[in-house]
Length: 283
Image 1 (cartoon, helix red, strand yellow):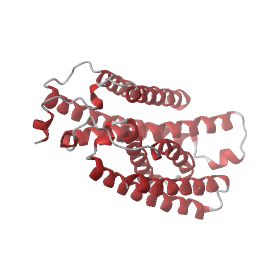
Image 2 (cartoon, rainbow, N blue to C red):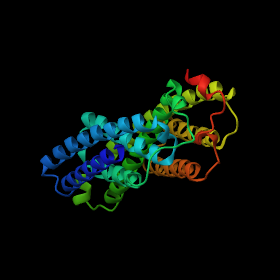
Image 3 (spheres, helix red, strand yellow):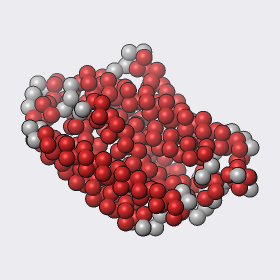
Image 4 (cartoon, rainbow, N blue to C red):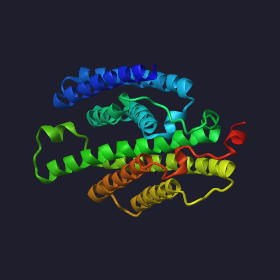
């Protein structure tokens, strides 16, 4: 049932993407942006229903696999964009975010969800839930920053080339994009820090050790250090093109690292090896 609901959400994502692209192509048609926003909001709610049904069917186990991670990533990415749109009123960003969400969601629409290696009782432990939501939430904010960084580089090319045409008029100013990248990276870093703290609590309770040199722990710490350095470099005066490029490189490193962990079997015990104490922790 959850896969059917998810496909309905995907259809709504496609409709929202189409509306935002129409607005980007013809900014005078402001109604397209309004339609895109409300259709995207509907997709977000239907997607939430799919996640809820999936949790009731599989006990939340699917979120330990690549498919479940992508499903959750798209949902949180959409929620973050809807929240930002209410405050920043920059619908042109929707023409970049909604197609990205749809592309990420498409591979999850086929196959059977679930991950039999994870005990449902363990998944329902509060620290595990907080860890997963905050980790994926941080990645979602980094993903939006990635999209805004692409917009910055496109706008910079228009300005430097003195091509003040259609693309220039449709994109926000360089200053606005630069500030948004900085705020998204900083917010993502804070949320991702919460994920590491929650993960440490879970690891201590389940494995009796906060650190075990597990590949996912090492990569997660490396990503945290990378984005922490980006936050610090911003305070040191980094901005503009080089900060946008660093945002792009950082997200590519993050995404490739996390996908590699999920597709290589047995490389990390975060895929389901929670040991004999898992049942005790969940009680």
